[in-house]
Length: 421
Ligand code: HAM
Image 1 (cartoon, rainbow, N blue to C red):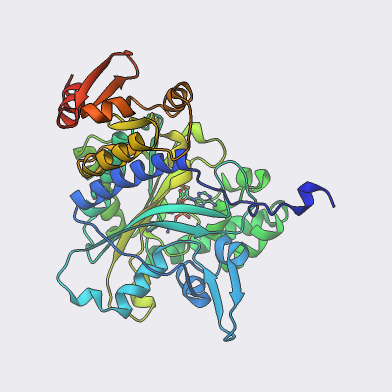
Image 2: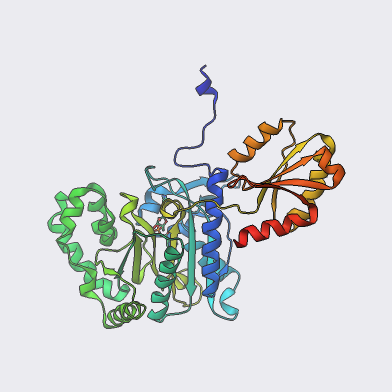
């Protein structure tokens, strides 16, 4: 057996987030949480697995997610469970189960965590990936649709994501879809033999899903199909017009994309995505829309909803990042007494928010200085046995090479002055 055979590797479509990268994740998550909270959202956390029927019913029986991509298994009690492929049905379940709708409004939630979809892995598409998701309940005014798009735009601006485009559409409601489906089916029927097997099935189950198909001929043929925007009922049309006018009011640039139906069954009225040409084939940084029927379809109150989810891996690939650790101090110690003095000194410094790294391994002075350099420490504190006796240390600024003797009580001041420069 070769060495490679013996190694246990990460599962295809999953990735380790290594410490260097994890810092960037933390920064992006912190920025997002900060922004979500500014708009009145609060965190909610739900389990990673749920009853399979939650997604069958919520995400939708005719979606690719439910028909092909779910991680479903039977547990020891014989129940069918599924690792969540998305977050939206879970939060609806949680609201109903915990009677959150009876609490004072607004019902605005955010969530960050892993999702699971068994799709063919490629750049920007993983089997375990992460989403930051926000959901609003009980606010039917199109102003909220515009506000969440504005919030998403703000987040991307804050993270300095440059190349982005906002696409918006309306997929109407169940009422407008009746006439639309009739005509869409009729158009699709005429070109049935040019469609892939999957799309031929979709003609009967959910013709809107044909627009999700990635097969080139289906894409081309579907260009001749009628568009939902021509079938909106007066209420949906008014909602869409107002939504767009609020976006105009924010002076947000967007493009109306009549084929933006999104890959989930629950949407009503507004749908939107923010895409980036820097992402390649999987170009959506985030996507969402309104889903006014899910709560009542689940037996809960008749409460409208809207939300979106950001794909973290895709977002992170667009965020420029250079780690700054201004108050990171590497301790160089020579001899056991010096190490003890260093350990004692690190206690109050860490309490002041200074990152102190003491590596408990005997090394030469040169060796330790080169470690500090490799680790990118802006500061080095040299603790020598003679200095310990005198109650002093040598503090060195690595970029300028400036070094001076200081007493313990001066260290904080030196760091503060340097940050202020
Ligand atoms: P979604 O469009 O399926 O919507 O996913 C949202 C985002 O998650 C995508 O735009 C993409 O960035 C990321 N994403 C999806 N699948 C993968 C994958 N396999 N690998 C990497 N990233 C991926 C939803 O999930 C809805 N629940 C959004 C929503 C919330 N609608 C209303 N509320």
